[in-house]
Length: 324
Image 1 (spheres, rainbow, N blue to C red):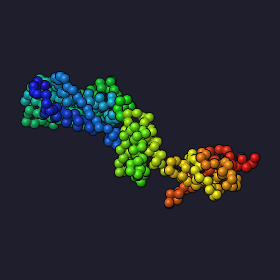
Image 2 (cartoon, helix red, strand yellow):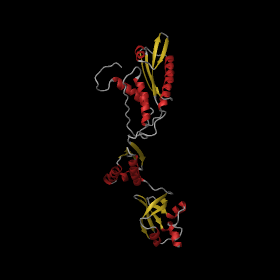
Image 3 (cartoon, rainbow, N blue to C red):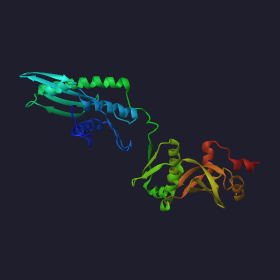
Image 4 (tube, rainbow, N blue to C red):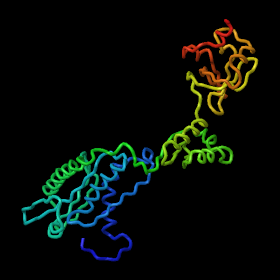
């Protein structure tokens, strides 16, 4: 732009153009909950004989889509100019440096195919008529749509995946009452998860957990460990559990880490069951499928082996064994 100055902090042009480009693009950016990343967009303008801020909008929009940022739509911008002579006027599209310098208006319009996201105007005349504004906006729309069409030839939408070098942030929400279980006494559990998975984990007071890692497999490890600590039994759902303790009246089955329920002796088989049958056919440490029948107000879980057998069409090992 013909400005010679020391290479120190950003100048007025960089700050102003950056603010305009940010305003133009901000409207299509995803919210933090759906895309919890800090976005840094850099536009290096090496030469210009037109609007570098509108070029930044176009190039920046393509860069975001290429990076996999889930923007709502592509954004393009164009600088409109004006030449007046008494009552006569001409609106110019994509003005050059001389047209900006010698003309009467620099009107930057940025937006998507659906509408405008940012405007900026500098004029050298006393005012503009409604007719001039209408023509400038209409001409800018046609120019913007033309540019968007050219951009679509390179990229029609944001890429489905982020760069393989970008960290993956996975967000889940848990019951706020389970936050203490994830953290553990003195932070024992959360430190163990971070150490074993090699991820970074942030926990919010509302139960939102964000897991960051460049490796999706490590994220899966952290997710599994957190879900093992926080999942809750659902009535009517079938689980695969481990027999932990046998009693005269039934067996306690752990359906996931830290959560177990009682399979009453009457819910073990369609046939009468004795304690000896439980020890023989459902020994401690064995794996069985059970169905959650109910959960009382104290959190005690009632399980049924019989219901799981019927629903899954499994073999009733106790009944078959007693027949023999």
